Length: 432
Image 1 (spheres, rainbow, N blue to C red):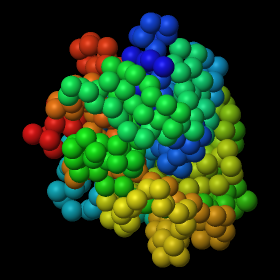
Image 2: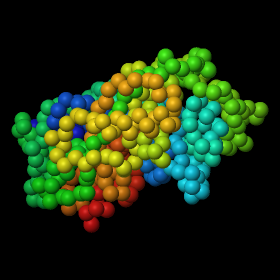
Image 3: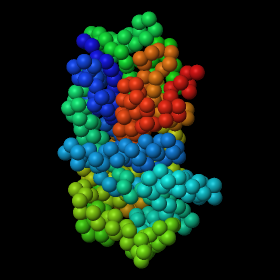
Image 4: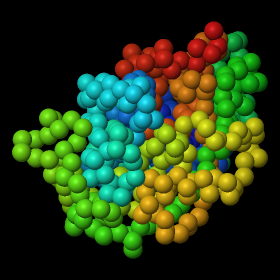
């Protein structure tokens, strides 16, 4: 069989590349084919926290996250497909309370705002208004993204797969790739368990398995697979007192402080930050209700998001500390250690005491891939014409998938790439 482009890996990134590539291709003359070794949605992507936030330390990443969020927000209205998206908003605390980190967060907020990303810097009083019961020091600050939120990983994978097929992409599950065929120095096909597929281009979007496919070709990239553990905590519904009836959130905690927020001059005339919080919460169009916004805490190294579809909350690690390396993804076992469970409980209760009396309801572990600079690898491998990679998203595959799909499709089709900075993310930074 022949295809113009073969994409290896059926996670959010691979499916997005297939979707955007197929939109540009003639399904009969230049078919786009995606190959997944297992079932679609059975890999690491399905165990992602799937938080969509735009506030990043890298402005290149922030711009991609902004465009991806807008894409996700439009899918349901354009196609009728549900992604389980909940606009919870995302609150990111400063990494520490040192003057340097506080000033850095303020400057980042201003830079994000100049990029068209809706984000505001909040002081401690305003954050407690936003998340009653939140425990922070009086000199703490955070970045608030009201339009951000979460996806359901399984629903999103299913939707992206359906949309890719509707655009003409061929999606084959349970089709492991044994090797990439190189003839006369360039890509000519892939060998699968079901035989050879000839092609002009191969995109490796196989997460922790990407290095294994590249190594036989003499392509060595610094890819490190790590274990990502998640704990699940029961919903706080039974323990909360709603302060905003009919809104998207049910809160527990002290009475609202009436804080004006860090940038009070940006509020609408005559309104307090509390008024804006009320406006944000009182959105009857949201079918799923979250008990609180996503909280990202770089200081403690964790994040927590509500999962209203399953009546629970999810907590995971944030940053590089605490992750365990995975040498062989085929030997990965879904187990979560007691040390993680204990650590997660301490972090969560320290910031959100409302969870103190809520029981754990399970745990799971997944995988993702990192690079030394925490930036993904996107683009061509110069030494092998026709070879491309799209991997190492450090846990942000859902956050960036639509932008990655658009940019890689532009690249594969010989168009100028506008969806991301090709130099910043090029794999050649490790191969030159």
